[in-house]
Amino acid sequence: MENTQGAEPAEVRAESGEPDPRTPAGEPATPASQVGEIGRQAGRGLRWSVMGTVLLKAGSFVMSLILARLLAPEDFGVYAIALSASQFVIYINDAGVIAATVQWRGKLEDMAPTATVVAISSSLALYGIFWIAAPYFSSLSGSESAAGVIRVLTAVNLVYGMTAVRSAALMRRFEQDKLTKANLVGFLVTAPISITLAVNGAGAYSFAVGQLSGAVVTGVLVVAYARVRIGFGLDRVVAKRLLIFGLPLCFTLGIEGVLLNADSVIVGNALGRTQLGYYLLAFNISSWVPGIVGTAVRYVALPSFSRLAEEDRDSLSLGVQRAVPMLISIVLPVAVLMGTLATAMVVFLYGERWRPSAAVLTFLAVVMVVRMLIALAFDILASMGKTKATFWLNLGWAVAMIPGVMVGARLGGIQGAAMGHAAIALVVALPLGTFVLGRAGVVLTPLLSALVRPLVGGVLSAVVTTVLAYLVHGSPFVQLVVAGGTGLLVYVLVVVPQAVLKQLGGRVTELIPVRSR
Picture: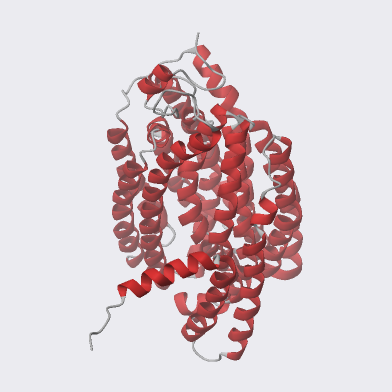
């Protein structure tokens, strides 16, 4: 009989490539040593994830700068509509198979054939639904011409469905280096195709065809790297276990997809595709940090917390207490700079014609921080098997967010939509996420003292940056360097302990050559 609760036997771990967090003497490890062992493996995966994500986002950033000068805001608006459909599908595409595979208690080989069939069947069914619904969805979003782009872009999810189990196998074994290589090669295909199509007048299809081409190449490499035997089968017991875990998670991810994309549909319907194009640019900028840090963290968060949850609740709580302050300390200064220097950032990077996006970015920077914290909470709950809790968390946020954005868009245009989004994130999503984690048994009280420095540093940094941005006139670049640099320095001086700063200063001093007399 398979062991489905608690820690797995050592022999099962060895066969499935899982870590066996025990001491060298063979004794059960303490919570602290369990966190350390899994943390070392997660750290390696995180380093690869960060490196790969940074390279991908840097490349995507350069590509967006080029495309912003080749395409009109209307083209970005059409793409935003197609992207909202595609991103919604991707969240529910595999029926929760990736997460179910990562946290599977047992040997991967026993469930892979069934999981493959479930994932492919789900992605095919969803693609058929969205092929039929594309004209209606595009009309609802304010641009009937988006239907064809939707059909091309959602085909990317067919590739993801076919490779879901293989991607999960790499994540489960902390082999993020292979995922990183596959994604980088895929991007090297996406970028030249998208730019070439844009130069030749393909409009929004430039994005869609380029992404589909890159996804196919990435998918082939993932299958090759995963070393999971290609096979198809349908074991009802395995399928039931997968779906019991995956479907609630799938519904929850569907709600998360609504959270990320409903604002695009609302803005497009209320204000038209040109205003939606401005909104999309601001949303893309606000997604830089979630895209770089958040994506890298989520590659390792679910497998890490899953392994900790297998041991005991104390190990999991300790891991959470270490992860949250670190995440906030990294994200908060970037959000402050985005919010206070939005106009300088948009005009400097994309040009004067994209200035309307700045008013949106100021408020979406707030949403960015909350999104990353809720995403982390989602992974923590999923690792504990609390998929119903994740569903109610995202549903509560979505129910409040949709009318908030609708009212904001009607009253204040794209800026009003962003203001409504930010208000609901702070007033509803953040307290709800804290409540759900506490109810699940995660001890959060020690976080209060750990968050004082980052929050104080964020407030002081925002004040200094705002004042200097007002005083420094002229070039947006000068504002970014002077106001942004000073604000960041203030944050570091407040948040980083003096002992660490002295240690860093000592190392810098050692690197400076001493001139002989």
